[in-house]
Image (cartoon, rainbow, N blue to C red; front, side):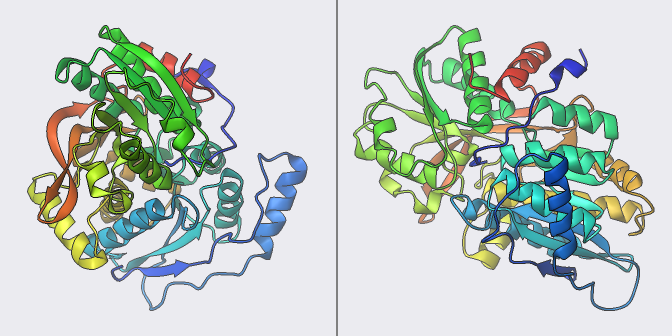
Length: 450
């Protein structure tokens, strides 16, 4: 079965997911006080282009040599997902430090923009990157709802886009149509469907409660777990949805029935921290096992979670920071030395993005004759990342990669995510069939599991 026109969905335009070297780095202060513009109509498009024309021009790469490779990077550097964005930026910078910020005399010139994790700001910033800075590569937003509005614009302009997350079927369809984009990190169904297999077959859970963010990231993560868990014979006791602007999670945590056998949670950023801490405070941790998606105890959240609350929590994940492989041991040690904390999955994502970009440029001797040539080279790269081997599926142009079950343990005096199970070379649809994945993905890109 192929991706088809019927997969087109409206972009999710609201909410926020709590989803170095010799390079010439540029950072603009982002959109701190600027208001976003929403989905572009004719009048709004004109306004966005006017904003782009009025922006301050960025400095060019220092030194002589070949033409720079111009990269725009969208990250939430303020707001509830600040730590997530900083971790990804740090990972990318470390990757350029390790793999080289200049390729055959061509410096990699990066503009980091703070999109605040807001789709309208992300789109406005992207128009500026394209119209004013003439970037050749966009390292896509971190938030799924931002990806949903940015990817169509970038890809239709013929510019290379490396996204963090496969957010919509339209995104995958545009990857196939325009041939300049891909997702180098993950989609929500890979870890969560394999997590459901582990929950049912290893933990022998038969009825669970699910709780997730009330946006596409939450719908897809919960939806993947639900679909496979029910397919295996399990049932869902209760579904709870949390808005991304929630501050006090006590009413949601107190809604979890103490009679449920376990809880599966899709949380991220400060919401993950608050959820973990409240879960223990309400007395659930002592009697109801907790499992979640990658971001529940990722190192972008784990340092702020109380040790007594986080210890023993399981996640299904594409990256465990205590993964015991030579590549990850070196990466985690160097990252900790440079930034004073252990890498999160976002750190691994940024680091891997840098390697893919540099390896592709090396195959082109640093010169970008066209965005399509660079896209072909980037889509062909296979790497042994800290998370494990990564290649791209030609079905979705998102990764085929390992998935893990991690457990929070104390290692050398620090809370770490330690792998306790490995699923190798998992396809984008995870444990689901392709047809079941396509059906779920279409529906859960715009609404919660039905």
